[in-house]
Length: 231
Image (cartoon, rainbow, N blue to C red; front, side):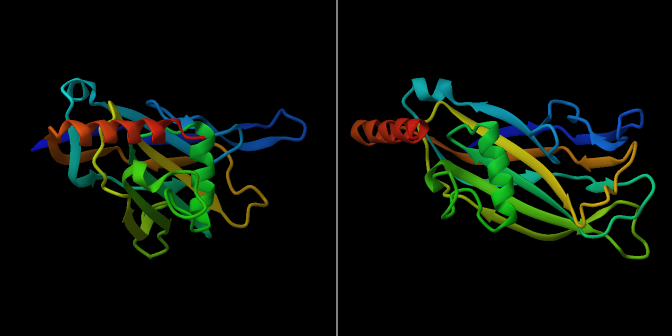
């Protein structure tokens, strides 16, 4: 059995302020650090992407059959304003392992639709279920217990999705998408030096590299090509 590994660094995004602007602008989020990218100039959605190279196996005409995926993410999820205690906050974390890469527009749309119950590969999404090898959706809200650390978040729901289908693709792409929403949005509850933190994560993908019969492997290659190039 082979074990494939993908690493995603922590996200630590902070706010700044520009009181000299007219009108003054507060709570401007940065683009994150350590390889994360913010999706859009004014969004509160970030993603990190990494690839798992399977080209060496593909050259040997081997297909990868996944058998189990685990996610390790030790650490504290936090959305910490410097001056106020947030209420009505919702944080989404979407973890995906896919055989077909996605654009930034796909990722932002995916995050927005997930808020309304349309996950990747589900009816109404832009992703084909077959290409999503594994996914996990987690949602957090503010921890309002008396013992809570300021800004700490508590897990409300975590659910797996995906096809678990074998693939003959030459790489797998993994994404970690983090976003938050705060109601009410006005006035802006963020000022300066507020913090959004998501811990680092490791994906562990266990499976077998299998030499399939030639015709079966050719059909799998054809299907992988079709899925990667569909409009």
